[in-house]
Image (cartoon, rainbow, N blue to C red):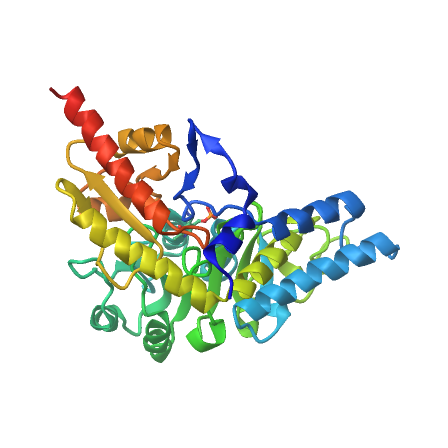
Amino acid sequence: MTTLTDIRSAYPALRQTINGHPLTYLDSAATALKPTPVIEAVTAYLRENGASVHRSVHTLAERATEAYEAARADVARFIGAAAPETVVFTRGATESLNLVAYGYARRHLAPGDEILLTPAEHHSNLVPWQQVALATGARLVYVELEPDGQLSLEAVRAALSERTRLVAVTQASNVLGTINPVAEIARLAHAVGAVVVVDGAQSVPHLPVDVTALDCDFLAFSGHKLGAPTGIGILYGKPERLEETEPLLFGGEMIQLVERERSTWADPPAKFEGGTPNVAGAIGLGAAVRFLEGIGMATVAAHDRELAEEAYRRLAAIDGVRVYGPPAPRTGLVAFNIEGVHPHDVAQVFDAEGIAIRAGHHCAQPLMRWLGVAATARASFGPYNGPDDLDALVRGILATKRYFSRGSR
Ligand code: PMP
């Protein structure tokens, strides 16, 4: 069994002090720390290879291609995809969602069609659909949340109709910590002939995700939240959906035949990977998913949930602290506010204590409006967090309260 100490020892960034305190990292929902196997895989590629993929026949290029395609196979296995060809490398969740919006939705939606969303979507799973609606005449329809922030299947069922062409929903909210019943949503959506796009940015790093079981049409996520470098991400698509999707980037590597006036495209996934790809990032992502598989995603999920639910309980019990979303079940984060203190000031006091948290609207302004706040503070967890980090979180809140009660006297 892998202990917390073993896991923590794999993250060199934890071995530092910030403002005189050992680093407490509680910002994994923004981006995760990078474990040694990822750092080593990327470094080894840069040091010993550095070649591009799919181009030359020399040994280094062949090795780079093998490593790049092995990473694709690792990701496919990790998300339960039937074939590596359904896994497209992108820059991240934002690019993946834009690829679906531009390449699929703009081509398939028409005036009168509806796109179903929730008010809890990250801007990356919201603004692209606004653009699709503007370009096609389709209409955005929002399923309202329950008072505690959960998404009820009844509400989804009521909002769906034969006009619904696309449902875009996050599997895990980056603010509320809720986990949406995506498999059931997909079943309901498919029954009316709609395509289902899942934002997996906060679910894939924290839960076992199986696209075959979910039966979603598309799944988008970012490598950096899994421990890979920034600038690499994934769009999974069912083979028939990827066939129906046009590329976003035209140029080298994505073509089959180029004539003077017209061209034909390579098969997916190459069709969507125009230009020299982020080989180092893909190799890092392969290493990141293998590292998480080593811990076991069921273990990761149970660990994150336990920390988040305990954090919720402890924070909700502190006078003047408001915690958002349901107490349970939740994914590995907790968003909160301290009465009378701006969340940016909270984050500042935390930083002085060596504790990294996030403050702001979390790229979810419609959700902030729904919650009736301008911003929140947010603590989020990764496999390297433990009970000491919860103590640090409470210590940070008490320090903030002390600091501001002194200031306001
Ligand atoms: N969706 C959700 C739910 C997220 O939390 C994030 C990252 N904050 C994104 C999408 C976008 O991810 P990226 O910025 O890596 O493209």
